[in-house]
Image (cartoon, rainbow, N blue to C red; front, side, top):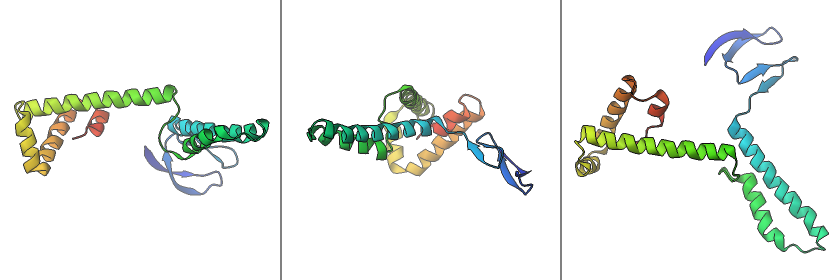
Length: 163
């Protein structure tokens, strides 16, 4: 992302980020690109509101029988206010698959780190980590940086690699 001096629709000059997240429409309004994550959680909140609306509408139709509300009201409220993913759709599957691959990559990198730095001796690694955690973390950081600089892992893999 690059920042440059641009003028707005009124001719005022100021700093504006040169990315595609904002597009100036006629009249000076901004159109924001909504991320897939934001769309997912908006959809989840709408589903939660729908569950609450269904509950409210169904009580009079069932002559005041509200037993189902015991279950549906907490579910609707949870879907509206939680930051966890509740709906199972393609985005949810994509995120879960990405996390699974990330965990596999981290596990493979950790095994490679132990084999290259500690000669495959996991007990030696654990003892050194217990004795001086900061030193081992520093060694990990230098090792993972070297992998990235040599092109063995991507920048994204480097950013997401956990110790």
